[in-house]
Amino acid sequence: MRERLALSRPTEASSGKTGSWRTFRPVVDREVCNACGLCAQYCPDGVIDEDLNIDLNYCKGCGICANECPKQAIAMVREER
Amino acid sequence: MPGTECLRYVLKAAGPDSVLVVPACCTSVIQGIYPGTAMNVPVYNIAFAAAAACASGMSNAFCALGKETNVIVYAGDGGTVDIGIQALSGAFERGTNFLYICYDNEAYGNTGMQRSGSTPLGARTTTTPGGKPTGKKDLDRIVEAHNPPYMATACSAYPLDLYKKVKKALSIEGPKFIHILAPCPPGWRYPTEKTVEMGKLAVKTGTWILYEREYGKLTISGPSKAAMKRPAPLSDYINGQGRFKNLSPEVMDEMRQQVERNIQRLSREEAGVC
Ligand SMILES: Cc1ncc(C[n+]2csc(CCOP(=O)(O)OP(=O)(O)O)c2C)c(N)n1
Ligand code: SF4
Ligand code: SF4
Ligand code: SF4
Ligand SMILES: [Mg+2]
Image 1: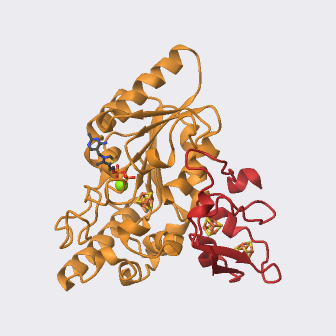
Image 2: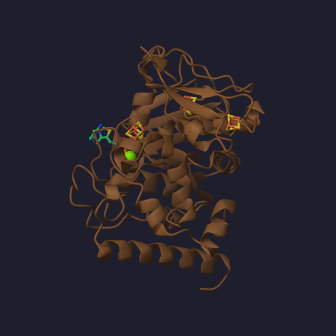
C-alpha cells in the first residue's frame, strides 16, 4: 500500500512544523469512513498515514481531503488559537 | 502546491537513485534552504535557460561513471515553454537519456502570476488583466516533433496515472517528456479545497487530454477515453475559476472550438484516421 499510494512523510525542514499555518483542521468521523484511502492519496502534503491518522504537525488545512472524501467523513473545523 | 503532490508521486516512482534539476519556480521554494531541504534526493538549482542543458551534462557524466542514476528535470511552464525551450529542444535532439517533467500551472506562479506562453486564452493574470488575448502554446506538439521514445500528459488529479507514466518513462532509454497540468488555487482563483476537483474537470471537459506516445504511437489514457466520447460542458470548468471571470461570448466560443478540435484530432489519430 505504501508503494501504491506513494506515501512519503513530511519531516521538519527549513520552515519548521508547517501545520502552524493552518486555519481549519480536518476531523475524521471514523464511524462514517470506509477506509477507501482517497484522502491519503490526494493530500498534497502526504500527512495522512495508512491507518488514516492525520499528522497535524504538517497538515496545512487545505481541505482537499474533505472535498474528495466520497463518504463526507471529514469535517473542516476552525482552529482556536 | 499541486506541484508538491505531483513531486511526491514522481519521486516515489523514480526511487532514491535519482537527481532533480530544478530551475527557479514554485518547486524551488517548496525545496527549502540547505541543509533543511525537503527532498531526499540531490537537487541542482539552475538558471532557467539551462535546465535541460545541465541535465544533458549530468546524464553523460553518470553514463561515463557507469551509473544508472535517473536525471529528472522538474520545471514550471514558464521555465519550459518560454525560457527553457531552446535547451529542451537541444537535449531532445542530442538524445540525452533523461526525463523532462513540466508541471503546468499556466502562469509564472512564483513571481505572482504573470502570463506565460502556457496561459490559456481569456485567462486573467497580473500581466493580462483583461484576459489573455492569445491561446496556449501547444508545447506537446513541439516536443512531439523531436520524435522522443516516450512522452505523456498527466494531471495532478490523477496521481496513480502519473505514477505509472513516470515508471514507464524511466524504463525507457533516451529523452522522455511528461507534461502535468497542475491547477493552482491563487493563480486560477478558486478555493484551495477544489484543487483535485479542478484537475478532474479539466480532464472531464476535454480541456486537458491524458495520453501517452511511445515512439510516436498515441494511446489515450483511461480517464480521457470516456471524457472524449462525452465531454462535460466546458462551463463546468470555466465557471469555477476567477481567472476566467466575465469572458466574452466570442472568447468562450473560441475556447469551446479549441477543445473540440483537440478532441477530434487526437481521437482521429488514435483510430488511425487522418
Ligand atoms: C532569468 C530569470 N528571469 C526571471 C526570474 C524570476 N523568476 C523566478 S521564478 C519565476 C516564475 C517561473 O514560472 P514557472 O516556470 O511557470 O514556474 P511556477 O513558478 O509557476 O511554478 C520567475 C519569472 C529568474 N529567476 N530568472
Ligand atoms: S487538510 Fe489538506 S494537508 Fe490537511 S490532511 Fe487534508 S488534504 Fe492533507
Ligand atoms: S476519503 Fe473519506 S472514506 Fe475514504 S479513507 Fe478518507 S476519510 Fe475515509
Ligand atoms: S502559486 Fe500555485 S503552483 Fe505555486 S506554490 Fe502556490 S499554489 Fe502552488
Ligand atoms: Mg508556472
